[in-house]
Image (tube, rainbow, N blue to C red; front, side, top):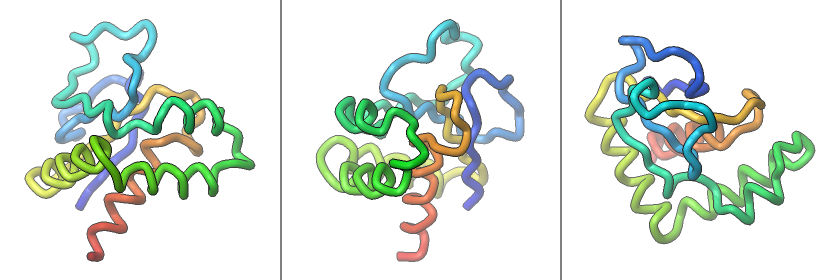
Length: 121
């Protein structure tokens, strides 16, 4: 499974495969036409409470990933994760899009880990 991570502000490429925005809020200053999205699964985003608690603090990264994984096990997030797994299985390439400036501590990276961990099941 080829799962890529990309900031949504980067230009789309034909090599991106299925492009899925995984943020709850629409990225600032981006026109929907230029996003070239296949799907917007906002239910996959961390809860507002978790996002605010994390605040892209690298010291909280491990705990954020643990709490986020827990959120992905329940309700609409679990349903959206199942949809994302289906999309990943149906296409050779899946690109998870996010808007955060921090490219090393964002929900798309944590979500990719969840998808790849689930692949071993």
